[in-house]
Image 1 (cartoon, helix red, strand yellow):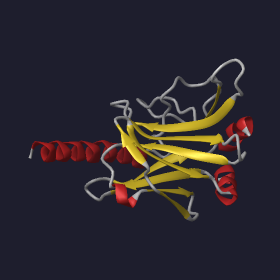
Image 2 (cartoon, helix red, strand yellow; image 1 turned 180 degrees about the horizontal axis):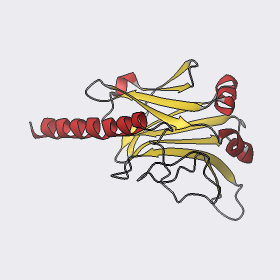
Image 3 (cartoon, rainbow, N blue to C red; image 1 turned 90 degrees about the vertical axis):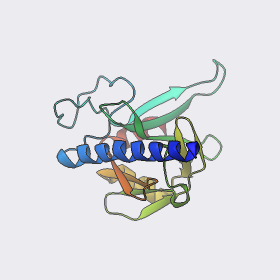
Image 4 (cartoon, rainbow, N blue to C red; image 1 turned 120 degrees about the vertical axis):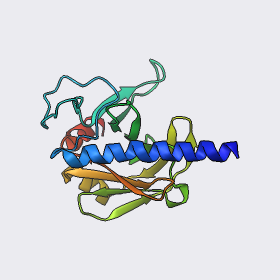
Length: 190
């Protein structure tokens, strides 16, 4: 009984948090939901900012290495964060797989999802790509997929990526992610 109450409380909290993210995205002309979890880069901002919204650095390229002798592994990422709580709603990380040299996307989604339905990616008004949620842990749920050439072309030329999923209350949630600087960031890691 107690675990059922905890699950209901989490679902209610998730529903309210994501609803706030949706309201923020709807009331601003520029997508205001995405914001970086990391400090903003020194590049000028391409989109106007609304009061109380942190800067939107867009897609950030990062390279790391396990050691000095290990090869450099690079990825680009963007996240959508609730401004009031700092909770990450969506984090997208795209890297080039070293063995196949093809791009692979890893998505971190919030807890409290309708897992069997999975998640969906859509660039502008193009076709949707279905993602299966593979695992969940205390920071969120995860899905990954290789990025097909047609999806990569759409990401490079598109204006907005929409990540959608269903919460436990079976409400569809759509989080917009701007693509204005995707192509430039991707070119840095390929």
